[in-house]
Image 1: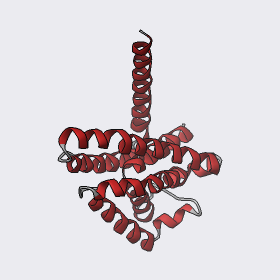
Image 2: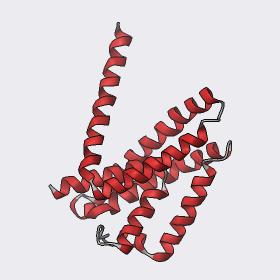
Image 3: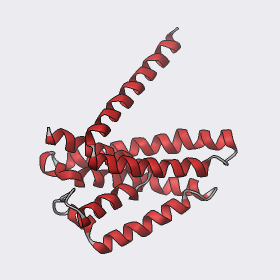
Image 4: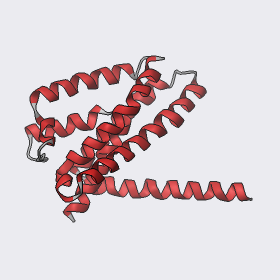
Length: 188
């Protein structure tokens, strides 16, 4: 059961990295440094280093600000196309001792795919739709919402991973249902 909860935690953290690369890494590092909720194995324990926490905090502030400025947010999304999947891979591998139970390459690949998928949906579907329908006025509120969701999912992934697992299953079921309906409409 613990392995399953650790995997739910890892998937949740990597998904939140797809929205904001530094929030899950910063939260994991803070909780590992100041609490006993997370014990990071080497080399991931570097996330709990005070200097790394300061660096992650600075990068978090830069990303949050860049994502709120029109035109800069699109450049930021382009840069984050590399950073967010990498952060998701690190978050997946580092979180809750999953790296000791799952092969490191598999853990990194899962985190990369999850964070990359969330980022792709955000950058290629959600944000362009928001920009087109609101003339760009909706980007700042949507960006703030993404940061809040990333923070909440990161905390839930660590504190209550069963909720994140349930949400993952529900979202996966909805995506499969939506794809099934879409395929049936195209054939009809």
